[in-house]
Image (cartoon, one colour):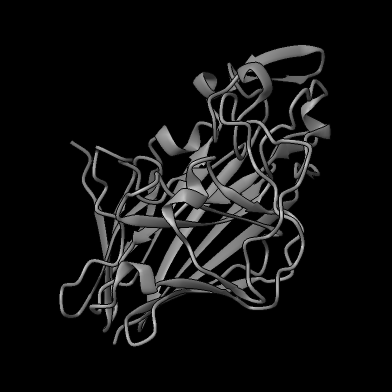
Length: 293
């Protein structure tokens, strides 16, 4: 069994699983759990990291250098065991690098470092992708944290809302339920000004996707109850998702997105792909601030 890494501040305790470098638990001083209950009747994930793709591939394969490679939805990082390179009372860093097994499905040199740091009531997650190779590294990256719905604090589930940093009037994108691929037509935004009132029926056709996003921060909570504030300054796309009826809501900042329906191009042309030059690196930060009652 994998040993979890625990970090603490004067306000929060986080448990981190080296498999996937995944945040599994975030509790406050009272012992209240702010994350998903991971009920297997719905979804057992907690906060998987999406790398080197976000979403599904057309036919489950991508193309590069004239070759085809199979890869599961959201990539392989979420099921890979990361090396623990730092474990301090309030901070931990995990690393995944290419090896012979990974190069069979992803023939690129990379290093992915994921750093978790607690300060007071804020957890900062910073993922840094580096290219130690001699050719451009094509990748996407996404966060996929699932938080309790309802949150601690006693507010009713149907009183919760997602408040965006700015108004979000643009149409949203949706996925084809059968393939998980991005549909070509947009859908009228369910956001009222800057506020989304999440309801289970909204997610019967999978995630809500904002790929023309004005905001880089959102707040999830209910008046008079607890709240979680998310800031994601480096991520241009946001997904919000749950399995309808479950006791969690996923707030998912992404750099990347699923293949569009019918996409058959090289991975370098996939929407949202970053082409990282040899010797370069790129970081993605997510700040999660817990606001108890």
